[in-house]
Image (cartoon, rainbow, N blue to C red; front, side):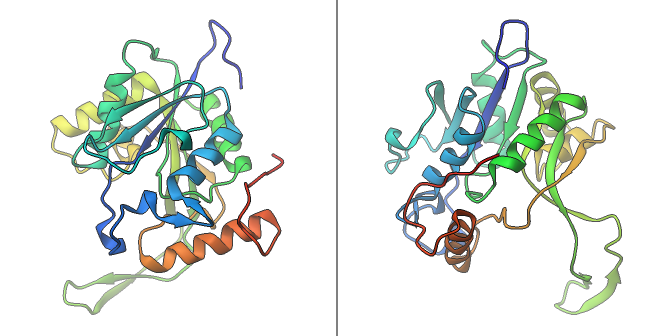
Length: 248
């Protein structure tokens, strides 16, 4: 990863201010134990393995009493206040970077609850982002039959899955483009479900980068056990209680 003067720099934005209510746990999901460490620590470790020289902006609840800075492996990092919604956290992070980030710098936004993303996928996404001015995101083609709900818990119709993808993270864009897309989306009242949707609203088409299906987002209680099994499988051992190492 180049960070020479005159080359684009890489910034990592990780929203981590959520309360994780769907988990039904006492702690926010980013602080739940996964293979002996908090979910957040695993996620930051993966990002650092792929991009050790990147600059990190971690979005945390201003009243967060659980965070421990020892979980951050990056030399260059900062925290910014998280907002009510994900888009608010990302916008505040981008504002915090305004004094340093250049418009052509690269920004990857990654869910803190996706600790199983692989180094290989991260680096492929970064390579794609450098080549595509509209940005790029990890995604997987839809494999299951898609049903539309009639609003009352019954099937109204079956949708073709042809051409449908499940969006994952990270999602990456040039700093200037991402700032413009999110600001215009919020100003117009657009519901921003991810960064790519805001960029799409500008008429641009971010690149879909095929990712691994084990890049799951921990959302429900059963996801935590699944993530632990995934980490163990990725490490090639039945005991997941040691640091993950991957050869890109």
